[in-house]
Amino acid sequence: MTLRQKDPSYLYSVLRTEDEDAVKALVKNVFSGFLEGDYWDWKFKRNPDFDPSLVVVAEKDGAIVGCNHWLVRELRFSSKLKARTILGADIAVDTKHRRQGIGKSLLLFLRSSEAFKEKGAVLSYMFPNPDMINPLYRPAVYYIAAPNKTTRYTKVLNWSKLKKRLEILNRRLSTDNVFKEKMSSLKIKAVFKIGEAPVLPLRIDERGVEVNEAVIENTDVTFRIDLATLQSIGGAKHKTLRLIKAFLQGKLKVTGKLSTIVRLYRNFWIFREIFSLRN
Image 1: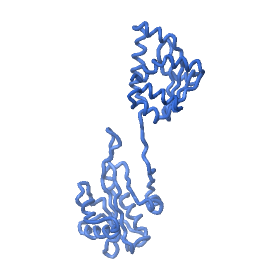
Image 2: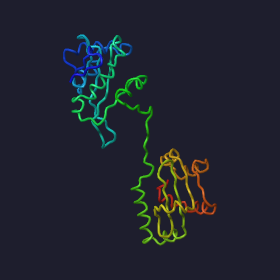
Image 3: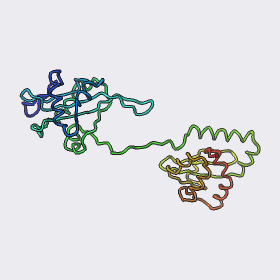
Image 4: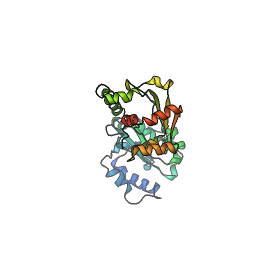
């Protein structure tokens, strides 16, 4: 595949063996400020994933004046999910030939080549100079700059375990008369709001404990706690004491009628059963 630009004197083609020394010299010259040694050989030539069909060169009057590299990578997004991707590596243009659209053409050449498509990659990405995102990468190939931060995902509650706990508690009503009597005095509609997690509405009475969305509109008491505080409680040795401390510090907020809150305090055992807060 050969692509011609507005200036027909610039020609673009896939890397040939005879181009390697010129490309190596160009990369060393352009990045001399922070690269030393046999950088090109180390990163590309000796790389097990090196593929010359994913390297494109710009040529003028028989001389290599620009180059761009891509490498096949397998990204693992989780323990079960991985994908074949293409990593954009080093793009270099000789200082005497800049502002001629060479960088854009080098990017477009690989993006439109059959070699690129044949790799079966689901996405391409790179770690460019931030100063070059808007003048080159975004307008040339519509790259989107990723935020300079990471997002942490946390499982606030293990819903399958919570479901099993409720099933065990509810089965005890038919076998444990003492437990049944204790539950008969509890008629509470409680809502738990934990950070950005979905609301957890619980109906607690003589029938047992049930997740019931109707409780949200007609609740007796609401618990509010941020995720960081909840995590500190979950990792504490004495969870109940840490929970009380969070309440006294205002990190755990409880709203509702005073009589209801007092009744819940006296029957805190039910929450230890539900959320496994035993010390």
